[in-house]
Image: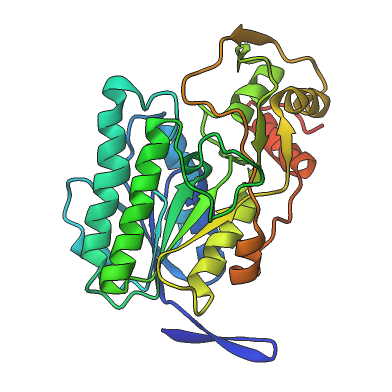
Length: 333
């Protein structure tokens, strides 16, 4: 541990941070933030084939250039874990098999291995360490279709997809290791994260690409379903606060949400406005596992962490649109 001076006080901060899934959408942003804040970071990623490996490597190109970053290519479901944890003070477990629609049928094997087994193996390797915090990336998918909104952490989880089931199982594992071994876990339930580097299978990525000349957007359902969107920098802020905030009860669960709750129909219109052109859409029936609505309360996260979303949907989407324009070599609007 070391002390970093801040105006008027001194705060204990961990020396080495472990980020699993460090080359992914959220993991790469978190890694950059931790490096910018002066921490040493060990990033772990197994570069699965869920989407193009070269996209992930581009995500962490700047981090790899830092002398305070170490990249380890390892699969948490099969490889030896204790060496990854040497000298580590905080674990940010971002690695997962993402997405609802591919988690059915034969696809479930990858979800059970990468979301449940990998989490259990990592927790078990951590239980004998003096960690300051184990921050787990959970999901609003644990709620399913709720009886009321906004959802709170005391609501009964009822996952509507196999993906949601695996994230809830991993949450329960975090709670079990907290209760049995005192492991200081906290689960952050992300609500539809968006922003630059968003995975290519996610809605806003596909929508913006369609508006900038890419393939038509696959529009599932009639556009009436509602989503609570959270900008990636707000999610990163929540992770950092979860790592350094004292007196978080082991096994805590917190909603990380806000900044924009809209119907997909209204989201289509906003993106069309920001890209400056109509977006071609390919209508499809509702997809299995897609809930009608997500919408959470971040009251508890504010109470425990002092966290609140800072970026509204229009601001966040404008940032993501400009990132997409840069990717395809188009001038900024």
